[in-house]
Length: 212
Image (cartoon, rainbow, N blue to C red; front, side, top):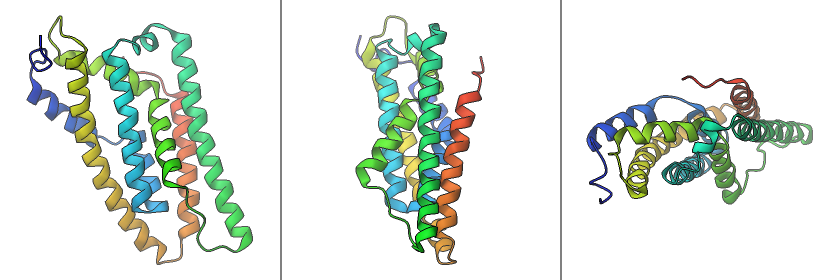
């Protein structure tokens, strides 16, 4: 059975995936925070990093590895703690960097290197166990019984592609808003808000319960 033969209601999947991608979530707020505070390039790299993280979740779901998160409470808790700690660490680091810039009288804080921004976004998405379980629960709804991993991968890549387009649009729009705000002299405040947002996202991930 080929990849396409193993898929049922492909266009329904694409439509459902597009609507789900439009729904705000932690990844959306991560991109908005990065774009507003650090510009279009940081926002677009964050969108790409999150897309790569989703590719990782697609591969895990396709080959059944993420099923461990659905059956092992310990594995789920470990991954959730890692993701929450990582987000909070990013937020605290941004808050400290912003405070150091204020103390030194620096108008514009240093920006993270492109590879660093990409890596942080990737791990933020990859360490979110709710994303892994979403792929594990959502993709099989559109796969025929007996279909191979190729069908899962194709569906996952379609979902990631539509999500990436939307995230890039968000990044560009948020970056323009950030430029407008920076002309008003609120650059450091944006970094502080971005850092606080990441901390809140980490706390939310830490205490969130899965909805069955």
